[in-house]
Image (cartoon, rainbow, N blue to C red; front, side, top):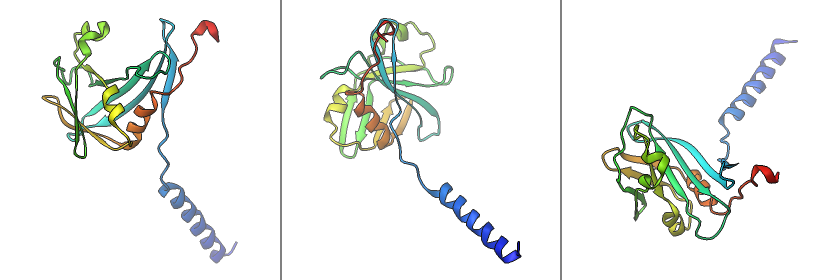
Length: 175
């Protein structure tokens, strides 16, 4: 193989590698569905996001039971235990452009979370916010005393909006 052919082959290989590396992949919904012990289904969107201080937060939006109009969708924000203690009730402030919402803290209505002494999670009713959104625009979350701004990208908002109609799996005894 001549050096000229070898150089062309290496250049083509390098160009192909750069094209594959540089082409962005489309964001895809990562809705997960699973049956619960109670027999009802659960669908959720699970993401790890970073606030402006570069601290990681687990953000879970979920719906229990079958898809139906007005079914509640809950947003759970979780810090790593020991890093931050979340006081309850603390409302979550949400902004998108000029639009603003204040979501009530419903953490203490969950027996599991209210008994957890780590206080590393908070839950909010996301249904009203999602009902107001017509587009999957980026959101900015603020939890006073915890984080100043947690950006939520549009693909995550799209996942949250799709939870209302996502199908749940049948109970284990019906499979």
